[in-house]
Length: 111
View 1 (cartoon, helix red, strand yellow):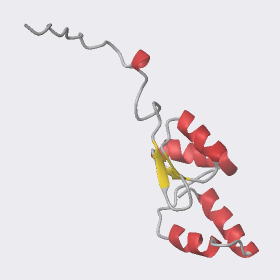
View 2 (cartoon, helix red, strand yellow):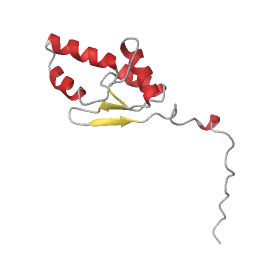
View 3 (cartoon, helix red, strand yellow):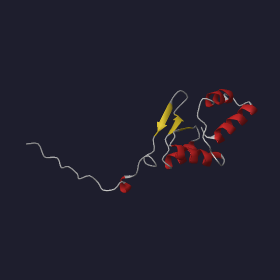
View 4 (cartoon, one colour):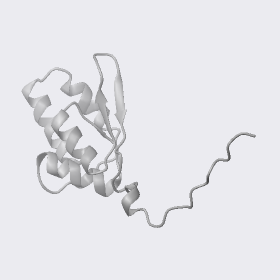
């Protein structure tokens, strides 16, 4: 978990935000990673560097993460989560950048 998220959770607990204490208690079980900077940019940089999946309800952040090749786990509705895998990014490359293509195999028509 990026340090910047830890700081944000601590601030939410101090303000008495609903469920913040439970989220902070769960976060204590996660490995803390350095995240110089602030906000979404720090989360993005840490996720790319660590090749991590990010859990967020922030649609804008989830979109930005996906554009940079980061998988996200987002709420689908009140009781389900959805894993959104990036189409390409640090883990995979688009076909145009993947180097030489394997030869295609032509199918023979049935006899």
